[in-house]
Image 1 (cartoon, helix red, strand yellow):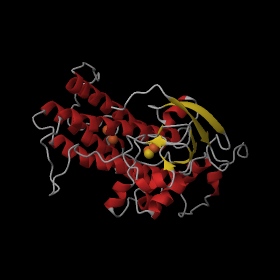
Image 2 (spheres, rainbow over the protein chains, first blue to last red; image 1 turned 60 degrees about the vertical axis):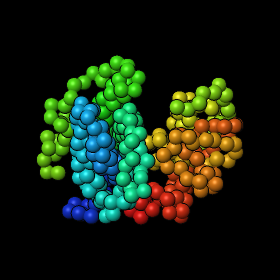
Image 3 (tube, chains in turn red, brown; image 1 turned 120 degrees about the horizontal axis):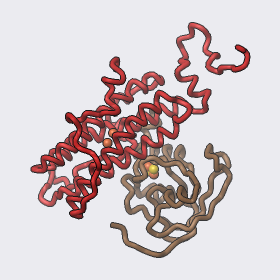
Image 4 (cartoon, rainbow over the protein chains, first blue to last red; image 1 turned 45 degrees about the horizontal axis):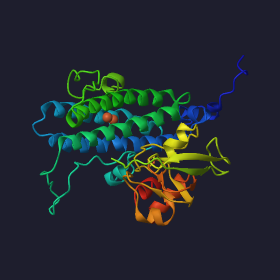
Length: 219
Length: 127
Ligand code: FES
Ligand SMILES: [Fe+2]
Ligand SMILES: [Fe+2]
């Protein structure tokens, strides 16, 4: 029976450490592991920039403790998403850009800046800053993340179960995040009840699907 | 909020012969509302064009405008020189007249952005 199925990844010679069967099995199944890896770098570039920007957005939800808490959950989970996928990039023989500016430039989602004009010294003019505008920035950032991780699920489905598993864990949380910010923005802007269907995380940034402690202790 | 309009325009989508998309070599005529993006109209008509952010940022959807006119009111990263060179981002591009676009131009557009020292050009090509 051994001649029934030929494995292209069998082209990696015994003892050859210059190639990875872990990458060749993906190529055999029709996905270019290099292209996938570069897309993963873009995707976690966005996780990393939103982790940064959410810090500032959270700060500026002054006096709105419940909004701050939810934003903190989303912020810490974005860091968890970054951490979860970093090892995968190295497994696929990629690396993080050496210059953080390149990392931010290639992020697949927009910068989530505090929606207020900068003053001359680069500080914030917060005089017209509205809570609903911050919530809208948060909502649109989550929507971008949903699209990105859905694309990565599409790219890996049936070809790379390891990356697919990561992407679908992250996607689960991004969908939670969108639901949270729809609820908050509906109430804040339109005085409309639009339940997320969730309660706050057990502890800040719980990352119930994606945290890599439970999933990959070595990372 | 975007202004409402009942107008629709015919958007012709050309998928190049050498595209890696399943639709390579095909041409589609779609009726696209003035408030609708070309990407959304194409996907809902079953034409699966490439995209990622859908916010006019990542450039995954890049296309070339060969005829007509579009507006990008909500694009997050779209520069005057893109417009001048005839590049458009279908995820945020809304037709302003009957329009023809050639899709799947991401690689060329990255080169163009890099040549203009605009992101994500060099950050992608140097890696
Ligand atoms: S999908 Fe990102 S710019 Fe169009
Ligand atoms: Fe995230
Ligand atoms: Fe998120």
